[in-house]
Image (cartoon, rainbow, N blue to C red; front, side, top):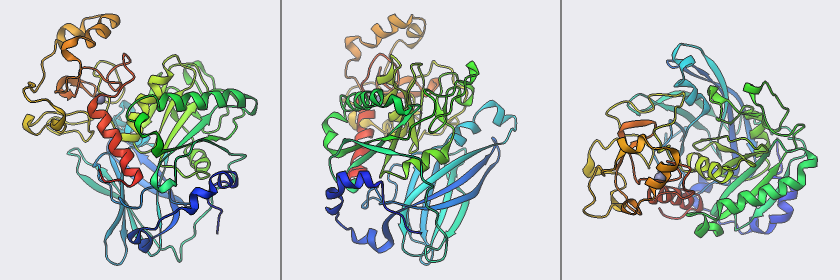
Length: 453
Ligand SMILES: [Zn+2]
């Protein structure tokens, strides 16, 4: 079956940009300028990990880069890899995290309860038969294959996403062809048709928040930002602890993994069908709600509440997770998941380290000579301070601009280190990424634009 790439409305408005397409010979030798989406069910508990195929979809133009088809970040708990069926050459790869992975680390999963999550991966549409492999990292973070699928583009059947209602695309920022830009889909969740005026204000505010901070501000002209509006029947989202359930576009819900403030999308097929209307590299779900809540899953999506007083923090912090695979740098908050990284193993995330070999600190190019590693700070004293006193402590002159290795990061008060005393991935005192996080985000921006790292 054939489908029209992207929404007609969208094509009308940016049609000219699409004509400026350049072709990369390697890309066009192996792929068509379309997107293949694989939907599957991911089932298991702490010990088991089973994937079963749902459906394959042929979608619109490939929005991702054509120059860096193989993942260069070595981040994410899972990997999708696409090999040529005849030569076994690796054509495409991408790391990602998933809701299922986070579930696996929770107490019910450790107790053995199996749950099923719906997931999707996308890659450029192959011209010839390929083998798609999904891999999961073991305890030592080595990749192990959990699922293999032979795909023959000449023989297999590819569905088209069902009409996702009246999905409207609002161009919030257009800088160039999707292949040469970072394409962000900003999905409205819990907005009814009569909330349209508020939605336009919220779209604009999210855009200003994002591009008010580095490295987004100085890279603004490398971004396309599309507001995606699939009207919801109800306003807001689910709040299970209040026994409140609402009928919304992607069925987002507070209390994900039984954490009151954790807000994730519970209906993946709906989200993916809505997204099939727009070329995108990254997804931000904006929830029409005033309570503090959010979440971010690497190379999947992030969620934030539009009307929370901390809305700007939530957007930038959660986008750090989903866009660049940044780790939480804080260590004090209780989370339901545990044992993210076993002792003696270096975490994959670019902004935390177990400091197994201080001489090989992964952000050492940003450390001024003479800075002690680990970098001393009064953690014991800090932990006893009130929130207001902590905020003051983090702003002390001796720490300003200092990149080192500060103990306390990624939910561990000992044995895990962060690059600076404060960062938006550490606390709500700042809306800025530390230099290490900024570098990591910038690298991802360059990746999607096809610029050398
Ligand atoms: Zn940071």
